[in-house]
Length: 582
Ligand SMILES: Nc1nc2c(ncn2[C@@H]2O[C@H](COP(=O)(O)OP(=O)(O)O)[C@@H](O)[C@H]2O)c(=O)[nH]1
Ligand SMILES: [Mg+2]
Image (cartoon, rainbow, N blue to C red; front, side, top):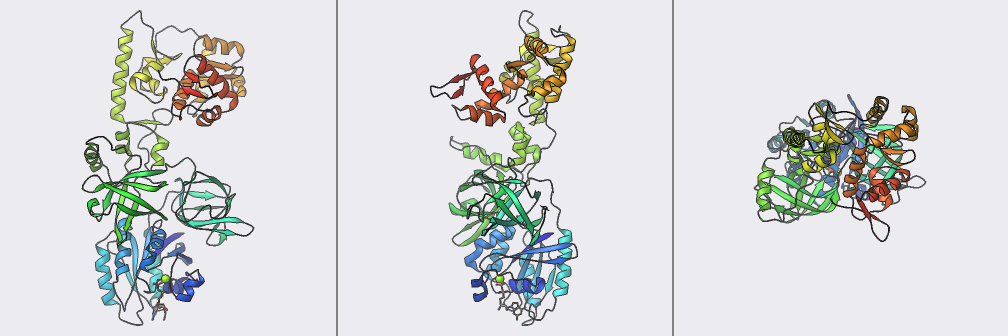
């Protein structure tokens, strides 16, 4: 399926053209049909040579530009309509400016009402305007919705257009910008939207970005047909279990859980306008959302937007900026997690940094700026990881990896030169290098150095663990690698042959930590847990700790006891826990 939005001045024949093309009624509301005026978005479709083509019909009247932007926001291509008898008009210009701000680069010009006047003048004028925008050179077709003249040619042009549209990633996380939410008696809340990428199946859980509420897809329709799944680009209607009336509405976004970062602050590069020429109070349009924001100019073409509402923005998102005189321009999102600017000179330095940000998200430069980052964090802000993770889901920029490795090896060498000193502990090295996860330490070591029993040791160093137990522990380590918070189940321990005696030997050799009968962890996991717990608002409860680590009560209770006994956490009088800084 493909989705195309209309654009153009009011009364130029957008809705009439869609009616003629599809045989469906884009003006959904009685008031719209009575007044002959599109107020809200309309949704119709037809069969094309390359599958169905769905249209989002937008209002042309200047009072409803907000609705128009909600229609165009998530849609990759446009059917631009200009009437032969009126030619280029103010909302033709405003709609084009918005499309340009959004960077829409695929479209067709339809010059309508050719039964009233020759189309050539209007076409020439419109093509001249379109040419100077992201749309560039577009094909044009003369049509009359009244006589039907030109409709076959328009159909062919639409087929050609959708054949040129770039494909979208079926595996991408879902960000569905909702354009309608309504209740159906007996079924509950239904939301619709244009799914730009990724897939949705019946039974999937989606997260509402505004509230983080989760909903299960009970039923899915696409173009009024039931379906088990839909893959972008597609129009979808979702019936969500447990969603009440009005709970989800236009401007909301439904997301694959855990794949996004909600933000109210973004640094952007403005397009089509310099930040100092824009008012400080603006409306931002992105997807189907309209949000008030404050703009703070940073550099010649960069600014910070502070939004009234948290949105699931991604790096590379195009937004439209609007003020009381109309569309003022646009912006591309450069950073959704920008640093604070309260120090003296911070804004000037930031301006220099932002000049180096590309418009199109670039994994390598994002990683270079961040140094060490989780893959999931990059994906959540819209950046594809540029390389495989070094360990777990940690990415380390190549430059930083080299310098960290050099620093670590010099620490190791220093310690090795002192025969009376104990080997370097992993946790000590982690702190010294300021690493977020102890698993990064062994990944940065070069042979013959490796980690054994939580210590950095030379391959030739004597071993204290019986070979059979060593093999079993190594098998366990392998089995647990890559899990977020790896705790072996009792079955796993049994399968690997780790009975009470073997566990006791491994604990003596500091290869395992025993928390309770049947609950053992790798020493690294304990350190990792402390890092995660330190990231929680302090103090925290047992269940907050359990959720943060994604584990169970059976593990978290003895773990917190273990940590408290070793002075790594403390208890508050009300029974909560804090991580003790060292
Ligand atoms: N003569 C003529 N009138 C048209 C044509 N297309 C639309 N109209 C009329 O123009 C008016 C506005 O059309 P409409 O589709 O509502 O415009 P929209 O605001 O762009 O959606 C209506 O009265 C239509 O009947 C056409 O091709 N020829
Ligand atoms: Mg209309």
